[in-house]
Image (cartoon, rainbow, N blue to C red):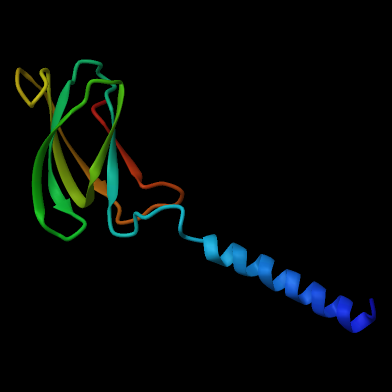
Length: 120
């Protein structure tokens, strides 16, 4: 193989490798206009939370979520900006309240679509 062919092959391989890196950058996480919530139950007695805040479209949403685990991923809803959440002792936001909390959910964050909120 002559020097021109070697150079062309090297340049072509480098371009493909670089294009592959560019093609994957930023595609790992979709949350660029809101985040999904991950609720960490530090108290250990909160089985649902009522979340009130704005979704990715800026529309006010109020929704109750069942939180049976110490850490519960709340998927399918995207939040941004200031939110409030109220903990409950029963599922479906029933029973005794377990505290009122606020958080600021960023529109995006590096390496994750999940923003952690807690009651501790």
